[in-house]
Structures are given as structure tokens and as C-alpha cells.
Image (tube, rainbow, N blue to C red; front, side, top):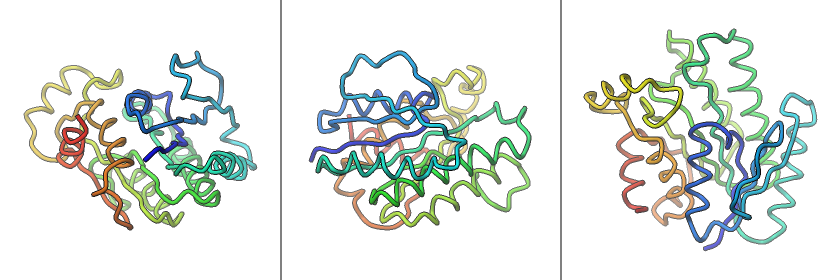
Length: 226
């Protein structure tokens, strides 16, 4: 079935990989990227940029209006968020990190839900927990909680470990991470991207509720897509 995707964070490392994976899927008829400033146009005509001020008070309402316009085309519309700063968060204050990961992401999710978008995919991280002593893991947990409260019919939360193929991940860390089994080990960026696409097109992913996908689950989804 044909579908469209409204995505934020599509210019980042994982987000760009998700956009590429979506344009490789024939049933994806449009990818609408919410961005803060224009970037070089994608060579695929199905990718469209919409510039919005994510810090503005009207941002959630603008996302809602955008989502409603996309839904008016008739095909299902899914929301996706790949916002994240990863290791760069070490130089951010608590306020800066929360403003992005909870404030902007929360506003986007609520705007999507208010538009009538029922399915949403969220990039988080392994170890996310609101009670964690590790700041990044704690903020990721708060981000997940914020998006859950938006009330999507179906919410898929992706929790990768060390991301290989990412400019922010040192090659030695990705190599060492491959020796670690389980959710904190290494997963390739393109596997995460294909798992996002699989979430939108797989019949087995159509059940309502919240689902958490670790490295193993993402690899399984990725392999099923290829």
C-alpha cells in the first residue's frame, strides 16, 4: 500500500539514511522533511523540504497544519523522528539537550498526532531510562515518555547501541562494539534505516500499542526488507 512520511531529523546521520531507505521503497510516494533551513535539494522528486522554526511557539500548530495537508492526499501518512545529537551532547547543557530532545521532539510528535497521524517511529538509544544516572540515557528516557504521551495508536521506539557508519562514531568504537552481544553492541546505520521502513510496510508491525526495537529486532526487520 502506498504511504507518505513526515519526518524531522532527516538531515542528520541516521535520518539521512532513513530518507534514503524510504526513497528506495517503491510504495513510499512522498517524504516530507521538516527542517530549520534549506539544504541541497534531493535528487529524488519524492523528497520535499518544509522549513519551520522549531523554536517558535506556533511550531506544533504548523506541524499539525502540514500533516493535515499531507493527509488530504488520501494515502496513509506516518510520522518519523530521527532527531539526536549522540556524543555531541557532552558539550550541551541540560537545558539545551532537553530543549531539543524533549521540547522540539515533543512538539513535533504532538503536532503529528493532532493532525490525525496515528503511527509514529522514534529514534532513541539503548539504555534509555528516566531514572538512569547517565544524563544522555535519562534524557532519552524522558523523550520516549514525552512521545508516548502524545497518544499514537502505534509507536515504534528504536533503541540502537553503537551506530556504525555514522560520522559521530569513531571507527575503533564501532569495531569494539561488534564484540559486544546484545543491545549495547554495534549496529550498522543502514540496518536501522531499513528497520524504519519495515515498520511502515510490514503487516506484522501493524498491531496497536508501543513496541521497542533493540539491535536484534532492528537487524531482523532489516533482513526481512532486503
